Image (cartoon, rainbow over all chains, first blue to last red; front, top):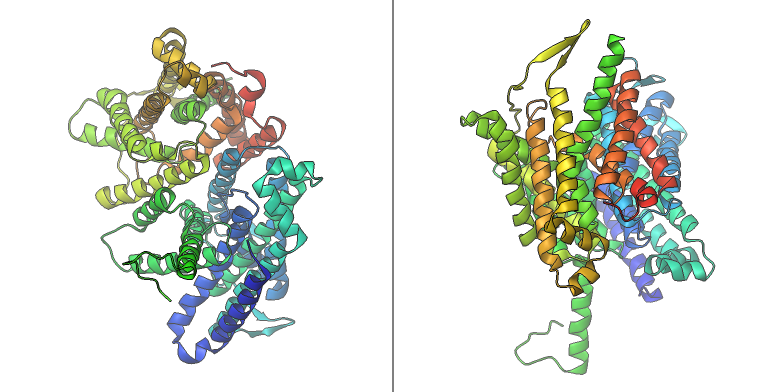
Length: 343
Length: 288
């Protein structure tokens, strides 16, 4: 489906967005820059699930596990080291190890999609309870107190690599987060275009056939799952860098559902879809938070139900199909009279 | 000696509550092969129905044992008619839709009743074992679990409804060719599963804090039990509840309740690695 032409568009589009990211602080006020920063961090998280669900066919209901583990790993090691560079690496490493262990038991056990969804959801529930119960002096790693329900305030934010004295300003943090989002997006595009990407898509389409062609689906799925964990953990570090704070709500069920909603409404099997879905929903949740009459959970649930019933493919693929049929009509001149064709 | 009796009671209570909170989920999973992610919210609705009925002056036993299951059963039928039936054959989409439903119910309940804890007093007193005190409600819950399992077994084994249900469970296509309408069976199943969840919610109301988000406290254990038990409703549920309830309570006694849950989960994931279709998929294949 994705052609090399699509890749050119992606690179040019990313370059334009990257320029926008760099110049944004000169035109947008600080409050909105902070908003955009957290949106971009969440969009990285959306990409992680968009990759493993949309391309790997792994239905992970608990992507917050890796996000949260990454966030806590970053917070604990940033407090202990006082330097963000090794902390970011650990924020990627810890979720990868966890994904490898969990993925080994699930994927090599050969369990069905339904079981996999339920087990990943259960892990996030249990991690939430576990981290919630870590209040008190007993639960600390080095100098970092886990803080239980209250979370960990005052986490050091990103600094220049090798120079812990130079802490990034909010504008610089935005630039880093925005460029990181673009880098993850392009990296995944390249990965999907590679032979590894083609194999995992083949496995998603027909696992038995891929196995008969000599590819062991289990190892490919496990590696996909681990890459998803790595990206989600990285998103966790970006998130903590935004707020200098992490609390157990990062593992909460509401966020797990939101990630699923981002990918679902944006569109499975695309990378731009989850990013669009994430930005759209983040903006909407912020707007809902500003009023009192309607509960955000209620709206999110309704959106999820409506999309599953009416737009199961999501926005991006539906729009693309629409555009393609319109274009087809326009080219072949079969557009019915009375139907306006946008040119 | 006394401590042994108390721990033993804890284990019995752990197993009984696992049976109760998982039964509705297990029935829906066994028959329709989907996991109802709004299960926790069905429990919550049962608890709310009980609390509201009691505060409206209804006898607590009637509220727990009649009103809660009937109300949530009706909710289940409505949900099946308005939502689930459009998604048959799309397992993953069904789960996503029930997740959306779960968020909607939590959000809706919060909008109506607010995010405050309500509750009812436990209707039974306590008793003493040596130096320890325990509530009579614990043996009552165990009794209810046994009653529930026995009635499920009796209905499945001896009635025409049970015969049809077993036929659809084993092979829906074959049952359909023999004149059974699977759609109606699924509707009834969803209603029955929801009613069982409502009953469990009603029974939990006196011992739990009733809030819109209370479902989340139970679903982790219920999911593990049903996934570990596999698709056989009765044997899967009983063996998984027995095994996991024992592990959970002993681990909770030795460490903390939260670590008990973590150890339970690790045990369950290990079990899934060895028995990917659950205990009943390996040992009770095709049984009830």
